[in-house]
Amino acid sequence: MLDRVRQHKERPEALEALDKMLNISMGFLDSSKMLPEDEQYFTEVELSTLEKLVTETLEWRVNKLTEQETTPLSETPALTIRMIAEKIDALDREVVFLISYSIMFFCLVNNCILNCRLLFFRSST
Image (tube, rainbow, N blue to C red; front, side, top):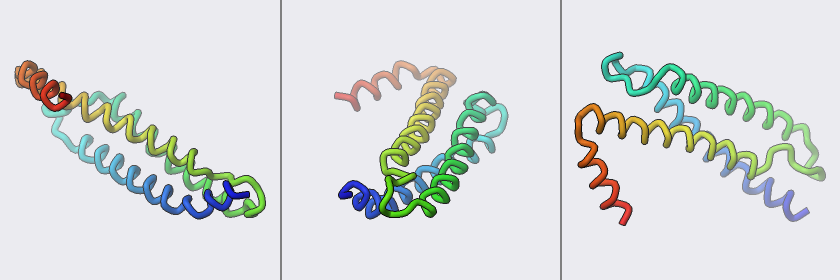
């Protein structure tokens, strides 16, 4: 029972965090798609992977919220904080991968891989 109460109280904050991560992901995706072709760091597959993840997460969110609204408070929640956190982590992982990839691509193109390594090692110590 205490877990259901905690889920009910903390779910709005978790959903807000998911919404923020979705906004970040969609903004990153939109800006990446708008890059001129000669400055494009990402392949169509990489961008479509993020787009698919965003679309699936949006659909999942709508379906789970609908399911949660019909679930009585006395039953196990259909939408848990853990489920939301997993979706946030998946979006974050994909965006961080693409950002890291773009940094490495930029360094390779601009022949500054040594400088990038030095910056990375300095910041990690």
